[in-house]
Amino acid sequence: MTIKDLKPTHVWNAFYELTQIPRPSGHTETVAKFLVDFAKQQGAEAHIDEGGNVVIRVAATPGYENRQMVVLQGHMDMVPQKTDDSKHDFLTDPITTIIDGDWVHADRTTLGADDGMGIAFGMAILSDKSIEHGPLEMLFTRDEETGMYGAFELKEDELQSKLMINIDSETEGEITIGCAGGMDINATLEYQEEQTVADGVTAFRISVGNLLGGHSGLEIHLSRANANKLMARVLYALINHTDALLSSWSGGNMRNAIPRTSEAVIIIPNENKDDVIRIVKEYADIIRHEYKDIEKEPVELKAEEVTLPSTLVPEAIGVNLISAALAAQDGVMRYIPTMPEVVETSCNFAIVNIGGGKASFCLLARSANNTMKDYFCASLTSCFNMAGMKVVLSGGYSGWDPNTSSPFVALMKDVYQKMYGAEPKVLVVHAGLECGIFGPKYPDMDMASVGPTLLSPHTPSERCHIPSVERSFNYICAILKAIPEV
Image (tube, rainbow, N blue to C red; front, side):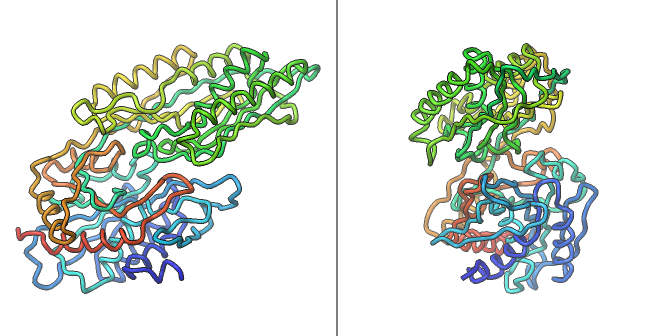
């Protein structure tokens, strides 16, 4: 059995087509053209706007011409994450899917159901002519995962709808009506490399791995290990107890994914080789104990001798960079006081790159409270400034304020209750959704977000719950049928 044999057939066949098109963030041109061609083949109007987004307009089915227009929205790009032993090339290779009981996952890579399922739902509605609906728009944005660039570049007059169903939530039976805002924190420093003195020294590669990682919004509250923060902790101990000098350090590759691996090369006096091995082993035991009830597998922390690099980071600069990385806040900072089960403010120490005369840290701060977000960004800026780094804040977006009296959400709740005999959960999430950007552009638009159940998005463990796909798709079709007249 393959995913093309699963039901609803139109959805899973569409998702299969998407798995065959490489579409990591920053590379959505091919999938955008595919979607425009697909929509035109189904008799719909479609184009790619100036921001690289796909906009599709679908005529109402007979008898539904007077219904209010609705826009279905998702994003085209996927997070490219893979296990250390995977040879997958996200720029050229299709995603290999595996059915495991009630779940679909990929072969050691992210699955791309975030947000391939949102796109597949739209494609299925286009291709299944038996679905009854009023006039529709579909908006499939580019590069949501790396900065919501498509949403930012959408023109204020592009959409005509007053109602939006965002299909980028990840738990069936939930209706999301609000989300946190975010800000990218980019700290950089250029330095003059020093030549390594080869006599009497040894180089070690320190590596952290075998971590779960995860979505830096939806899963930040789970207190999973951050590979960059663990590395900062170990490097700080090594420079203080073995006279280690930093040569290079790299970890993480996506701003919104909790980093699973981090690797550094240090240079130490030969007489301290045994101390390096001892300290790394001690910290490996400590970290494994601290995270034994959180991480799925024991955390890997290793030290191995490597060829001596030709250059290193000047000692004072290396100490400052490691100290700043250790001091920078990571994880949950505060929960919403009136909703103590929901994270208000957090940060992900996402990416580290040091070497070749350049150092950079990339962090993603999130908050449902704009003043707390500003405070958190100022705190991190101060931390990196003290290390001599230049800090640029970019990609900022506001949170999506929930409309608790929304008639559209009331309709969605009623439809779910009638279909499944249970109240859907209406909530605000800590993750960022493009609705927060659409709101100021379309202040009269009523929005809500739904979707099938996904686990561990932004990691190679990403998986999609098969029964929830059918329930969610049927639910969205029922909503479209229930939309009132203008």
